[in-house]
Length: 316
Image (cartoon, rainbow, N blue to C red; front, side, top):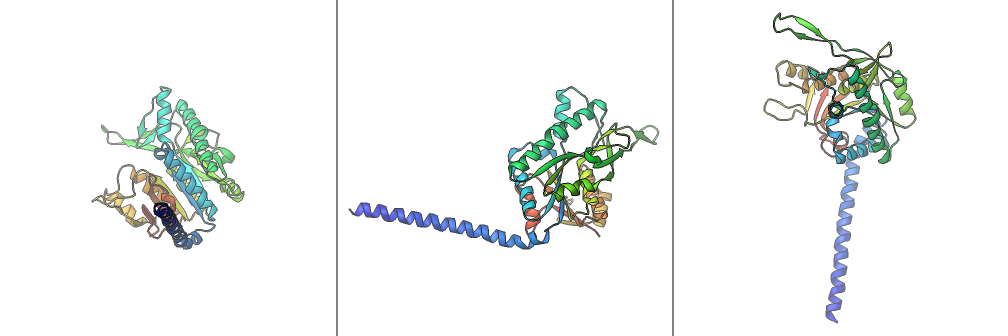
């Protein structure tokens, strides 16, 4: 008899322990929500432009968490606008179709054959995958490219390179590579005003109807500036801007950022990202942040916690 009673007592004790653990978990969740409240109020009805990089898109878990973050941002009163890249996916498709491509200063030279593939991959595959992920997470997303409604009027990007023999700068023809000349904010405001989330493929249209491939960071910066966004968030595959000792720099003014580019501290592929942030802040964006998109829920950490994440660039 006693052994049966002991079993009942142990079972009851286990249930009490489990209940206490659940209660502690719920209390922790409530504490997190309470701590996030001031930041939720701070971003209420503010526009946040997020650039989602191609390197993170191939990881299913990252893509799922990204979609959840975007939906939660919308549910807390933020108006998120997503601009996505797709360089690795474009490269893979060009290789598959045996279309050769080359790069100049990190920009893909895009001829007629390549631009058709670029548009197909960005607007027909990647854009729809992101839209589906956001919708599956409970949001209402709509995919557009810069050609839809003439959202992004583009012009041909001019580049030059120094001739090693003559020492003279000579123009380099990048083909159908462009840069934003004008962003039609009415298109985006119509989407946002309908309680939907715009997901933008970085394809622009020229004044005579030609299609342009545009760097996604550049598009995100131009869109953020045109919308007078509160935040521009660039998701990449590094923690942010590093100093010469490899330590993360958490905050920079535009003046400090320019100085770090000039002295070589900021180099390589980080230069165009920082320049995009500087340009966006100069256009009126309150702050731009370079974040590691591989971190789960990094958008929520940046927006809704005191510490934030990555490198923030502000006017000054």
